Length: 318
Image 1: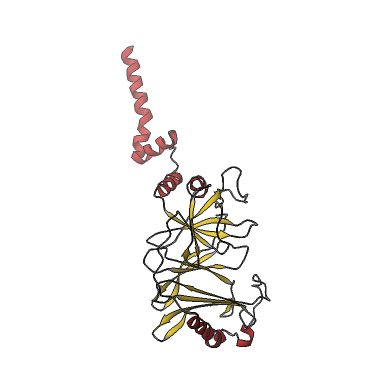
Image 2: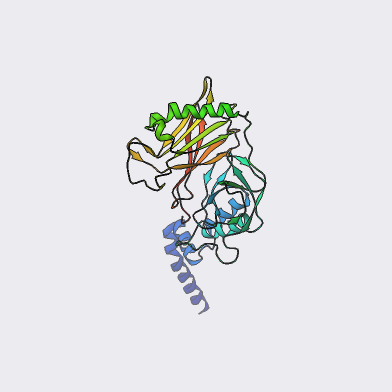
């Protein structure tokens, strides 16, 4: 009787495992996975490994709310800026490490680092700072910094600033006058019309040459910045970037809101940062549209022109 029971048990054991043997190793693995599902969160594993490396993070200032926020948009390193994307759990950990009260930040004005700033409140430090209509919002934080700051990096150590000789007021005025007389008319802007435009001039160290890069922008104050729907034969916004060549300063980048039969959003100059540490800064621009406060473009100097190297065209709902 005992022998019969054991034989029957062995037959049942073989009968139960025979289908698995016929399915092969892959089938066995699928069965085991179904019976014992893995508790590993692959996204969190990747996020935690990434955060443990303590990357330097680039922040944009978002002024679409009554109180400005700083919002992370990219990491920076030898490969330049790279878009930053984490899981919901990863963003919560990021908030603790980078955004909560007391976290150190380096603000920049036209590429020049200013004294260390500090976050005053993180996204989930208490009740959520913002309530957005999406399950995994991009976090933001409050901080105290100069009103002219548009870009910040994490930590108290500023990015290296390229060396550059200065430029005198007389030479700078001569460069701007040449833009008015020789460059702007090629875009359809007459000198008389240009006189009514609001102009801003920035001289920034970029390393593109031994002299500063000059960024000149013109805006028509009579036309709303979000009036993109109307096509006209003359631009309401013009950005001209100039760098020193053998025979003086010459245009190395031009952007107009009306060009090649297209209407484009106006841009605003954010600053110059050497994000990849190669000794040459990239130029950063945003768009003058309040509904797209984080859109960012960077340009790298190659040969004798500035070429687009990075773009960030997302909002806080990823």
